[in-house]
Image (cartoon, rainbow, N blue to C red; front, side):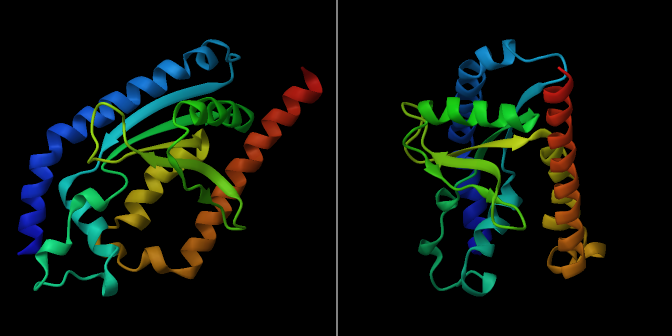
Length: 205
């Protein structure tokens, strides 16, 4: 089965995936250290890393195929190396004004990486996302880093399990028009809260 071949590939790549995520996290922590030290007491910057799990990686690759199925006659067409996010790092930032500072700082370091922002319901950038290779570590495994508003990022950790990788009892929730609208409403409310905090500080600081 193609899935079995991909599982073998995953575990052969795992040591290299770990090296990429360790390197990427270390670089992001180092280059944002000055911003971290300059934060006011209410501001936050947290860097978190994750390695995509085997079954999640296989399902992610499958979703990218026509009809969301693998062609059993062409196993050579499929490789987990085509995924951009086997090794991922997320910088959670509060409030949004600091998001721009972190993004601008990291863009200078990862200037060659591909920019693929995460849009909100209106198409505007909700978060920043970049993919590329960690020089000197791997020229096969992509790394991905995101710069995300903290409140939205923490909400995504819940939403991801409920809607993106739902339990069988929640089948179909990710395509539900009502749930997509509710998700957008939550993100909008969280962003408005951040904007309110920044406005209050500006007017009363």
